[in-house]
Length: 307
Image 1 (cartoon, one colour):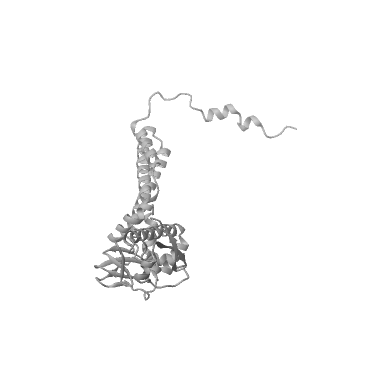
Image 2 (image 1 turned 135 degrees about the vertical axis):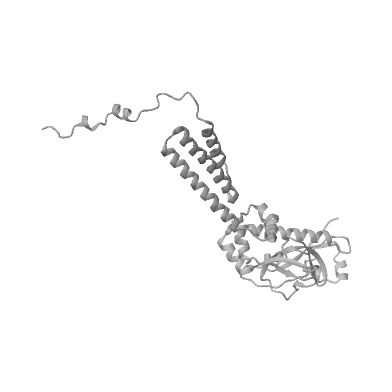
C-alpha cells in the first residue's frame, strides 16, 4: 500500500532550498558610501569606552552617532525598511541612555567642599562618584565648623565617637601642654584614635586638639560608618588605606621634630617620654623606645641605639 505522504511534494531538496535562499554569487564592484563607513567608525569608537558615568556617556554618544549614520545609509543606499527600522530604534535607545546617565550624573553632584575633598583624596584612588555619593550620604552631607581657639577634643575627656577630615583651617595637637604637630586641610583629624579602637570598644582622646583659626570639617559617626563598611567592602578598604597613610604621615612629622637632650630623635606621643621628667630622660642615655601597640594604648620597650 502506497504511503499518502510524497517526499517530492515536501520540497526539502537541497537544490530547491538554494533556489529560495541564494548565496552571494556576484559581489558589488563599488564600495559602500562614506556614510556607511562613518557609521562603523563611530561604532568602533563607541565600543572603546571605559567605565563609570563618563565612560557610559562616551559609549552611548558614539553608538548613537553610529546607529544614526547607519539609519541614513539604510534609508538612502540599502533602501530596506528592516535595516532602517532596527538602526533607528537602536539610535533612539542610545539617546535615551545618554539622557538617563546625564540625569544620574547630575544627581550625584556635591557642594564645592565635598567636590574638593573628592578630587584631593578619593578620585586618585579610583573611587567612582556613585561610591563617593554613599560616603557623603553617610556623613549626612553636613559640614561642621570650629571657631578660633575652640577645642575639637580635650585630653582624657572627649569620647572617640567619629572619624573626621579637616577641610579648611589648621588644628594644633598637644599632649600635657606639649606641642606635637599641626593638622592641615585634607588630613584626618582623629585617625590615630580611630585606628586604636575596635568597633565594639570605647575610648577617649589622649591628646588635645585646638583650632588655630576658623576650621571646617566633615565627620562620620563610628556606628554609621561601620555599617557602611559592612555593606560596601570596597569603601572599607579605601578608608583603611587613607587612615593608615595619614597615621604614617603624622608619625613621620613627629619624629622629624622630636629630639632629647642628647640629640636623639624620639616620638613625643610615646608615654615613656610624655610623662618622664627631664632628669630621668637624661639618665636614659642612649636608650630610645620602640612602640608596641596593645589595643588602645601604646607600650614602650627600650632599644639600644648606635651613633
